[in-house]
Image 1 (tube, helix red, strand yellow):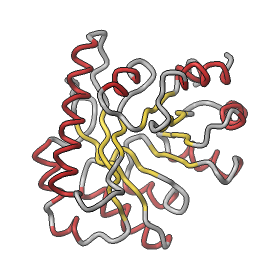
Image 2 (cartoon, helix red, strand yellow; image 1 turned 30 degrees about the vertical axis):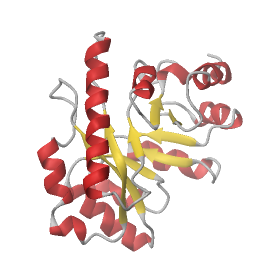
Image 3 (tube, one colour; image 1 turned 90 degrees about the vertical axis):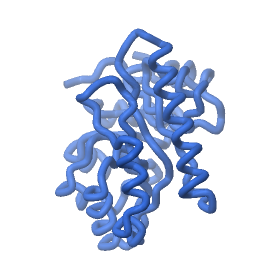
Length: 222
């Protein structure tokens, strides 16, 4: 597996203003360092236990993205270093992040996860739930979390037009939410959508952040 060549090939399709998150779940530290030496600094993990085992052994300038479904009792373990939490899908989780961020003396950036896939197994807020959250007084009182944008996962299907439609819907929702709730906030600017099999479509539909694992590192080492 030539990680540097894989990154170079992906970079050819990724505009300069789109962030590449290298997803390193189940990959060893030596593999991560290959991508680091190729110039990558944004890395994503989806299991807290694995992230806190790797993080102390790797360079300090890595920006760690948590991209999995985050349990509230695990937030304290990553609150002092995580750069961005991608998959926030409830006020309860946001409040827990806020509490741990306050203890750590930090502001933690988060993305709100929207359910766009035609699959019940994927997490995420509905449009109505999203708007209710953003208008909730408890949400408005949170001082140590910052909503940086939205995140979504398309249906796992060979139907490219379905995937495109789901990404297009999420981009239109992002634009609406930006205009109606965050028009004064430049920090609401990220749309995290697109993975190894669909990132080119995601970029065409307005993604600012893609999450790539297999296309860089190959199949995971379980």
